[in-house]
Amino acid sequence: MEPESILDDHYDKWHRGRFMAEKGEVFKWLHLRCHEVHGKKMPYDERYTQYIKKTGLLPFIHLVSRSMPYMNPCAITALVDRWRPETHSFHLPCGEMTVTLQDVSMILALPIKGQPVCRSTASDGWREAMRDLIGNALTTEKIWGTAALAYLYRQLDDACCKTGKVASIGGCMLLLSIWSWLRLPVGRPIEMCRNDWKDHRDPLRMPTAAYLWDNTEPFHGESEECYMRYTSQLDALTLEKVTWEPYGEPGSIGRHILFRLNPKCLEEAHLWRMNCPLICFYAVEYHLPDRVMRQFGLFQETPPPWKDTRKELHELDKIRQRKEKNWPNRHRHYITKFKAIIARIEDPNTVPVPVQPFDSEAFNRYLF
Image 1 (cartoon, helix red, strand yellow):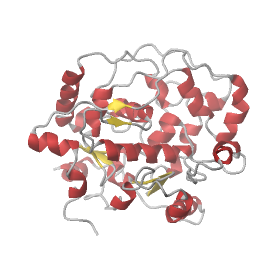
Image 2 (spheres, helix red, strand yellow; image 1 turned 120 degrees about the vertical axis):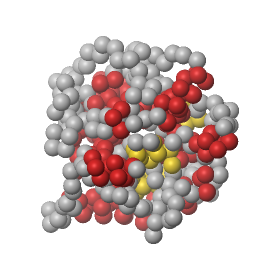
Image 3 (cartoon, rainbow, N blue to C red; image 1 turned 180 degrees about the vertical axis):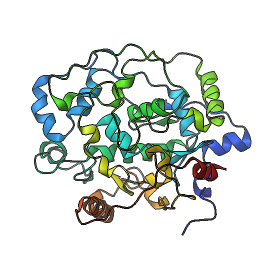
């Protein structure tokens, strides 16, 4: 049952956005806990390729090992201020938006079908744990894509309620940054000439959509001033300023991109709009694409279907539950549910759910 208000006091109590809007608070921008590779600081050893291929991680490893664009912590923080854990989306003047499994595929080319990344976190047997996560890829491919999105959602859930001077955010900042640059004009860096991409005549080493932002100017400017400017720009964001479908319209995804995409980017497109739990060890976060159908070029139901993201799930972490080690047992319900959703989608006897194309008048009614 949908609540009278989707905004929950449980989160509002500490939410950065509420303090800023109601009390005029001014916070520091968030510190980014991420590893950035610029230039050629992380040379790739070809001897690893035969092993990395088995894990399904080769497109991603090839992407991040060659170089990465410069992140903009002030722009990311302004976006985080608009994140709501209740809906797993950014609440903007132009409507809700979020990072989806489509973005995981198109930007990172990580797998989203397979065995969820969820195992015991006990310190005993860590060698066996690593062998299970990486070494046994021939028998059970781990779905690092859904794990990356689950962890990003969890980091956003936490960061939007952090107000301290040393507040920070982790997760895949590459995914969040490029998602933002592809869609929003706020904090978008200046593009520079892309570096040559060497695919070694291997389709799995072809570029992803992230290559569109392969080379950018470093972030410059007075951080506090930039943070306030980005905040004001997001407050004034209109429909016309948003690039809603950066990968192309339904039926022609990726065709307008001026270089050959990695085949992994489109391989699991049939799973992009599944409503499902995303799992990464202790974190379980719901993927709710029905709330952002405009991003898929489809009709947005009004109001969007309600799905409780579960406060009790947001409370689970390895610090609060130090004694909890057996996460596969703790999350067996969600693991089973995730696998069942994929099985149903891929069952040839399943009747596809009918969808309607985007309707601008209906979308305007949804907003206003």
